[in-house]
Length: 381
Image 1 (cartoon, rainbow, N blue to C red):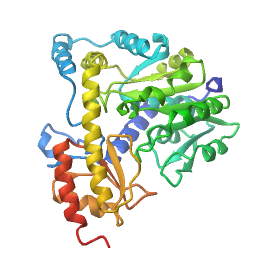
Image 2: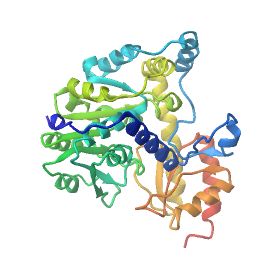
Image 3: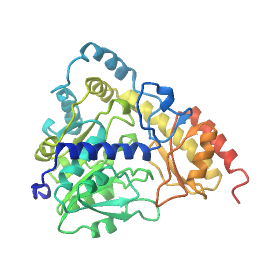
């Protein structure tokens, strides 16, 4: 297996902690968030306005998850050592895997950071798309791994043939974010799975499915069947988006048991009890999950509608966000929307005129549509 190659490089705990802190801080700032500098005044560090930068679910968690959080208070004095086993079993059963195929992590961010660390230590190369979610590759670069970034195609989707052509004998990890962040585009499973299966014969493939459970037909597109078939594939997911548990930091990775064991060896934190209990409850609440999907879809369709009405180009998003061309510096649009009470993220280097809009509630997106129409009035010829 590609993952069994050399692991001789020694990295200190202090170095890893510093790299982790830098990577997470960079991700937060990239999302348009704020970093707490000290003190306990929430108002001082949360600018007034509707948060539309971090791809959060503004409706919050299900009633079942909320009840589980409240009930966990009685046990919150305990460390959560070993208490992820119930969630592991639930996920394994849902995916027709064994619990040994499942690693519970602090959001999918920890899972992909661990992959960046474990495979980055091999000092080979990682292949990824550009532009995409960069936490894995940013983390790997900090410890000396070379990253090869392949531009998206004309539809802002992963250019799979070009990415495959970038693989070399020393490629240690191949990263695919599907649906992609920030563009929201998705490679359908009918195309992705045979491709990933072929690439996995050459190197380990990480498929980031943070947004895939927003799809009604998720089963048709997930790479988990490749894990079940014993292939060298890692799939990561999160409870932050559909399940609206971003603040509790619960996610997971699905991989071969020996890969799960390797990743787990490099963990430096402990899971939180409230998050585990909430994730268990939310995972079993299928009716609420569908309600959440429907709400997100309605907000996305509403947003797509006014963008199309104005004749602006947008990506075909499958996430809880929309990526569109403002035809001017995206920073100008973000500044104008901030004055109107909507907090957007920063521009992307390869797409400086494109803005990623994280979806709020349907009512918030109606208000945002009015504000955006006002901004573009007279600007579009």
